[in-house]
Image (cartoon, rainbow, N blue to C red; front, side, top):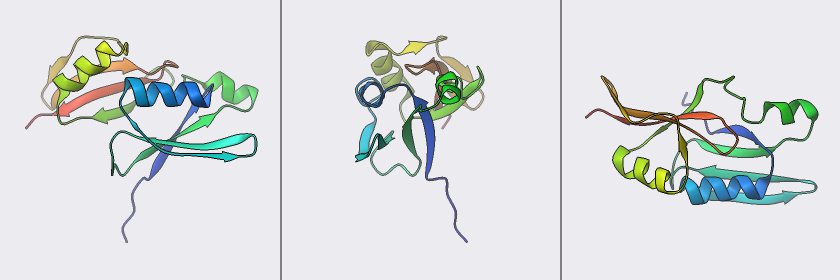
Length: 129
């Protein structure tokens, strides 16, 4: 039996704001944007053909609105691996992505913590060859 994680959701305040951030600042691909009544099915992906995608889910209740930017409870929650850390760190920085630190060189590779437009913390990393 073959299983894989196909998608995760990130709770967002606004669909268009989130699409702009993920596509323009992080360089993600917009995979789907389908109207579904008062909701939309919005999916982005770090790169074409990436197995795990992100569903941008607009908060629709007070509890969900409180969770915006807090899905990792203040910890790094998402891990974005790249094949060229320096390229992406520079591009993200130039696009205004907020990094919490300068790159660190760990036994497993290069890493730096950044946050998305709502405050969710991410690791940008490149595995050591």
